[in-house]
Length: 297
Image (tube, rainbow, N blue to C red):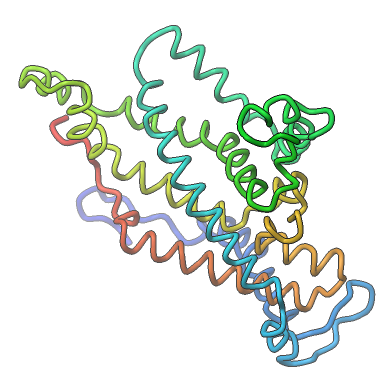
């Protein structure tokens, strides 16, 4: 189709074909296969056998399913709350000019350079009650034996803390970049009106970062729903099942119990849960609109 104003045609579908084929092959096709496997019995050694709804019926007798869903949702909610409350003001602070801020920012972003597996090993060593720093720090904060990971309640908060330590720098980076795009004229006008720093933060910075907050929240929440590798290495879902998330439960059913049919059922549930949350967030937060917030620029 040719635009009458410019005389230029719209890009052909051919230009989008490589991306569409890539997405279809690596996303849509695997999802279709997983849904099909959820109706089969498969141990990854022999050919899948069709068993109908047997795997889905098994959900009703799974003692870990509801607990893993609750833990996943709790990890998502507390992770979002803690990371947002830290990353937002940190990113705003780092956006201001200053050599000390640049130095602090460079140090804080180190976790972004480490893989989740490496972070799990690192914190596992630090939290070792016999040889790690936990044995020293524990008595100071009411854990005499320093066994943070061995306590069902503390283990959950350890996962929340380590995950926040890992991902706060990324979200702070988003807020830092967005804050630098806010027109300085807005702050200059507020200063002329006598607004102090906190009034400027509430009346200018927060509204101007609305879309960044939504974007960060979407990435944070959807990412938390699929959180897996750090939990696997740090606690392996323990003690007991106190930190067993839904993705970890799916992994154990597939790669330890070799019940890939039932693991596929859990994967479908996780897919539906993640998709539902994503749709709700993009539908009711204005994420899909994303109009410019640079008012007065």
